[in-house]
Length: 177
Image (cartoon, rainbow, N blue to C red):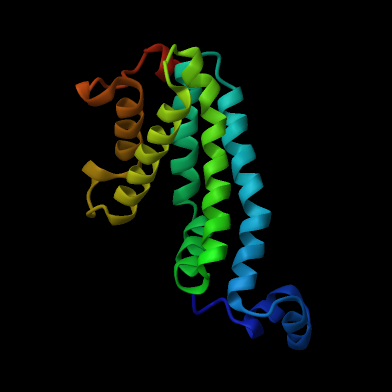
């Protein structure tokens, strides 16, 4: 967060410091613009990953893994960290709404799986993703809880519930990765 200063932004962009102040009234405004620019790109990456799969289960797996990969990206983590302290509630709500649009990407895949309430299931699936992101952020150092293990667990929970089924190598879902 210390790196996002107007003098640093001016140096990085080649603008005069006074010009940066003309474009942005605060660090929060910078964060909002970063979110406005980056979020559609991140959503497009997730959607492209989903479209590359031939099955509904594969699209759901791509949805989960895509969000977890992006959440682990240093740029996303930096914007998230800054937004916690810098944004007002209205800006946070706009970002939450943008995240909510991601849920729409997975509704059809859940319907294709035969889920009776795909919209509700999509919202609950997003909860699994958000919990996995928090787990990855808070995980203890050690290979047992690395990002791949967390992603595998989130995918297994999303596709198989609490029964604990694993996404085994050679399964239709794993083959699509």
